[in-house]
Amino acid sequence: MKLWKTLETEIEFHISIQPVTPLHIGNFKEKKKEQLSEVSTEKNKIEFMYYIDSENNKKYFIPGASLKGVLRTHTEKIFYTLNKIPNFRKAKEHSLKFSNQKEKFEYLEKLNIVEKLFGSTGYRGRLIIEDAYFEGEIIPEIRPNVAIDRFRGGAKDGALYETESIKEQVCKTTIRLKNAEPWEVFWVCLLLRDLNHHFITVGAKSSIGYGKVNVHLEEFLMFVYSDSVFENWKINMPECKLVNDIYKVYRYTSLEEVAKIFEEKWMQFFQNNR
Image 1 (cartoon, rainbow, N blue to C red):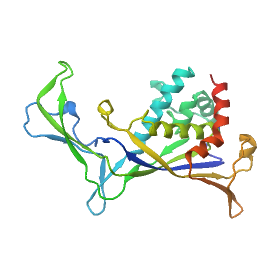
Image 2: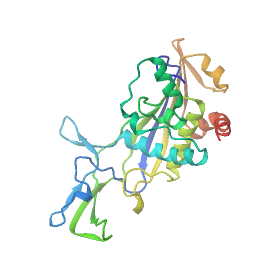
Image 3: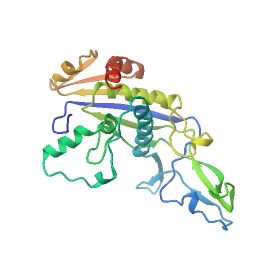
Image 4: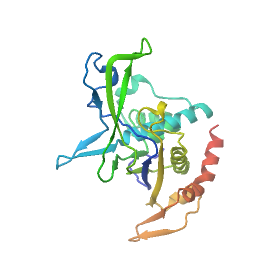
C-alpha cells in the first residue's frame, strides 16, 4: 500500500455539474425541520449552503464532503453487497494512536478497498473532492414545506418552513486521486456515469425527486512522476506530453475514452476480489 512519502501519480477529473431537478443542500447554520416551532405563524427558512465573500455577497456551493459522502455511500452499497467485503471501521478507532510506523502500516493493511479509496480513521484516503461553486448570479427558488410529526405521521400544526433550491445554474469541481490504483480510476468513471443516470442523487429531499444532476467531464489529467507506474499497471496510454523532461502529462476530454483505457484492469480487480 502506497503512502504519501512517494508521489508517483496524480489524477484530476475536472467536471461540471448541472442540476436536472431542484437541488437542496441545507445550510448547517439554519434550523432543521425537526426544530421548527409548531406555533409560530412566521415561516422559517432552510437556506442553501453558501458563504459570504469579501464584497458581502452570498456565494452558493456544494461542499466537497457532501459529494464525497454520496459517492462513498453508493460505493459501499455495491462493494459490501456484491463483493461481501468486510467493513473494518470500529467506534474505538476514532482516537487512534500509533507508537511506531510498523503499527500504522499493519493498521492500514487491514483497511478494505473502500476505506483505502475514501479514507478511514487515521487514513485520509486517495480520493479528494473540492467544493463545487456555482457560476454567475444565483437566485434560488423558494419552496414552501410543512414539517412532519414523526409520531403521528401527519403535518405538525403551524410548522411551516421554506427551503431554497437551485436548478438552472452550473457548478464546477475537481476530483483528485493520488497514487491511485488503475481500478480506482475506472470506478470514478462509473460513479460519474451513475450520477448521469440518476442512480445517485445529491443533497436532501431525493424522495420527492430532488438532487438529480448531469455531470460533464471538462478535462481528465494524469500526471506521472515515476517510470515504474506503467510497468506495474501494464496499460497503454497515448497522447503523452513531457513537461521539462521531468514528468509526463496525459490529457483527455472524453469520459468514455478514459473508462476504456482502465476497463480491463477493473475487470481483473473485480474478478480477483469476488
